[in-house]
Image: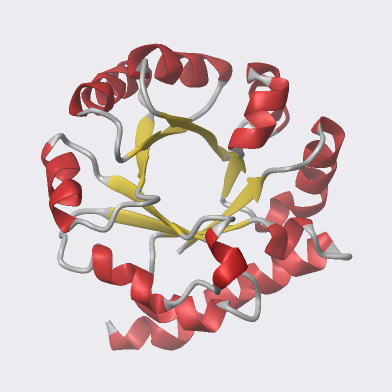
Length: 216
């Protein structure tokens, strides 16, 4: 399981400082939608320059104009860009085609999706990476639970990232579902010792994998 650090609702300088503190524990860097809206592709370019070997996710949350927005993200240095599952099939297909040209990937954000038929449709388009997203506003009324995985548990060949208020305390409830990627934002970025928080979360993931490696 990979650890993806979500940088959102942060200033330009805060993003860079947090990455300096936590990069040794992070597998994927997510440049959040709010950060991209405020600072544009310049912050994607700078993070790519500073972390040339780390996978970068530009959380564009594309809804339309997929061909243009995907190229924009990849040209700035992103390896992965995101599109909403409710976007048209054409938008998603266009982004997948652009991804092939740039040797990038597309992650489909399942926020708001409750119908498995939609997941089946996007998989048939060629999508192999999705994110289960327990949204920020949804977190005001409760915490993420393993129930969220019921949406994708019957699909083979899908890599699944999961996001939504994950921290060291909620991690044990999520790890048994073994998502491909765990997306953590405030569980690291809002902690007083962010380096330690990243080390602890990465360590918990690795310990779970070690203890269950003989059970697979």
